[in-house]
Image 1 (cartoon, one colour):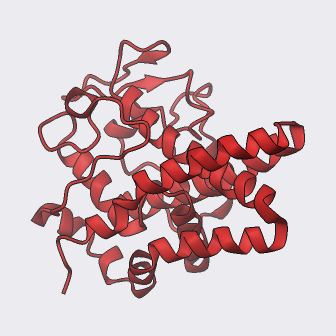
Image 2 (cartoon, rainbow, N blue to C red):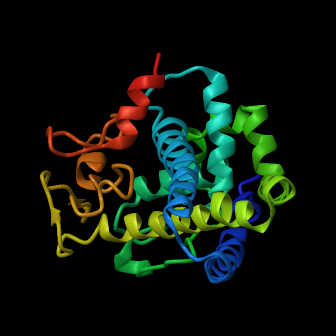
Length: 259
């Protein structure tokens, strides 16, 4: 039986982890400084958790089912998404489906019109309405995804401890905590500026009933997620970029792994 109150256990910890990651990252920079090697390590982590985990898998695969790939790739990338600290795959999918159903209306968990800018705290509802539950019928019957949801916190903690064991505080911070912090912050930034047409770099190609907005300034740092107006017009497309200059790094990755 699917529990409509499952979201709390999969997403409440996002705020806690964000604060821990923030404090740890600041302390890590204090101890080790910030050089090019550290930059590359953090970038690698952000690519693994933010691009492969959140954007390529949580968003464009599990939520919108915009492409097909090998099941093992989905499983591995789903684990990477968990390590990003923004919620379990089930919780993430449920919330994003609600976002599209109620975009910029009351009940939209992301809209800056009602929620403002939440850098460290994603806003989640505790209930899943029937329409959302129906759209989630594939993921909520997947035993692997149910395991990831049930042991979401344990997965994050175990991974951090593993990195600490093999590489000490340095590896734990710069390959996990710091890039996970960036993933959390960027997820919220995308949710905010993706519905703010007045922000620098913002423009709308489609006149939709919400405030969804493309933004070229943040496209590369967000792995292509800020082609947001395009995405709201064509949510089932695996590529959010439509013009040649709308660079969508995640779509390039998807082209390499899709069947």
